[in-house]
Each structure stands twice: as structure tokens, then as C-alpha cells.
Amino acid sequence: MAETVLKAEHLSKSFISGNKRFTAVDDVSFNLKQGECLGIVGESGSGKSTIAKMITCLEDVARGQIFLRNQEITKAKGKALRNIYQDIQMVFQNPAESFDPRHTLGDGIGESLRNMGMNRKETKERVEQLLEKCGLDKEFSQRYPHQVSGGQCQRAAIARALAVKPSILICDEATSALDVTVQKQILELLIELKHNENLTVLFISHDLALVQAFCDHVMVLNGGKMVEYGTTEQVIDHPKTDYTRTLIESVL
Image (cartoon, rainbow, N blue to C red; front, side, top):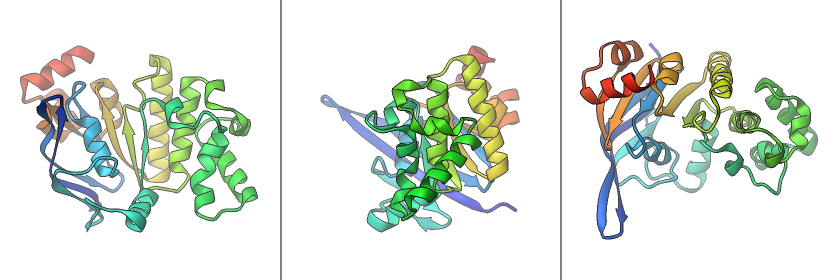
């Protein structure tokens, strides 16, 4: 039986906007096993990205706990947090914004390698290998974010995420800013990498069609609450809630 690598228990998070408090995530729990892909779906504002940010410690957890291979990481800081980033990496919605526009893509991809003590020659070779693994020619290491297309930049962002050889990849709407043809290409790349690298993937999307093509299990969020959870086949073919049925009808 596959090992549970990531576990969230009763996650909750609220924000204050003006004079009002709203709940972004409300008592959400799930497990993610090694090699599995879990899709988190829901409309904008349903809490999907907040969950990703809590897992990667970009947002504090108000209530609940997060475990990485049975070690609690809910409030990790300093060295413990750096160790987490060796194991968990995230690919964001807008790849160009995740790179420093003053530096080349190669610099961005190689930053974590240099921080690990890899010398310049080894870093250059590793960056070129990562680019080619993600479907880009090695000369892309010399280009700046504004000099490449959205799809090419997202491939570079995936290469950067893979640089530290993580076991868990979080894709936060990683295809939503791309046109349909490029979405398909990036999804095919992610499927290939998941298989070849034995990656565990948390795939956050509002598009159930993409989730159906990629994910083993699906969690449906509505207003911060988990309203449905099951295998992709169960959720897509036999939805239990009107909300899930509406999501399915809108894209499938």
C-alpha cells in the first residue's frame, strides 16, 4: 500500500476584508498518497489556493494541522521550512510573475541549486537538463521571462520546481492562464513527469475536464467547505451534490 505523504486535518482559515470576516477554508481534511494526484476543484473564492498556501507555509494555519510523512509542519520556520521546500514545490498560475524579470530563466531555475552549494558549471548543466526534460531547448536558459510565450514560461516554471527533486508538486491553476492548445501540452507534460519522476501531485483547478484527464481523486470545495470527495470516476460520473453537478455541466 502506498505511503501517505501529505495529510491535512481540519484546516480552517479566515480573512478580514474591511469590517467583515470571511471564512476561506472551513474544516477541510484530506490525505495524499505517494504517486497519487488529487484534484481540488471549485469556483473562484472556494478556498483552493488558500489550502495550497497553507501547505507551503505561505499562509498561516488558523486551525488544524498539516503533516508531511507523519511529521507536523503546520508552523514550520527556518531550517525546518527549508527542508519542506526540498520536498514540496509549487507551480503558480501566472508563470511570468513568478520569475524575476531582471534575471534569465536559467538564473531563476538555478537559484535553488546554487543555494544548495552546486557550482556554476554543475548548475548550468542541471538547468539545461531540466529545460530539456520539460520540452524546451537549453538555449531558453538565456532568455528573460518577457521573451517567451506563456506556455514556454510555464514549462520553465515546472523545470524550476523540479530542480530540487521534490516528491510533491502543487499546481495552483497552473494551466488556467494558457490557451486551450497550450493547456493540453502542459497537462501532457505533467502526466509524463508524474509517471517518470514518481511525483505526488496536488492539482488545483476550476476546470473539471482537466481534472478528469489527470487526477486519481477529486475534492470539491464550495465556500471553503469540502462538499464532495472520492475517486475521479465517482465524482464525475456519480456526483452527490447539485453544486458538483453544476460544475460538471459547465465544462463537460
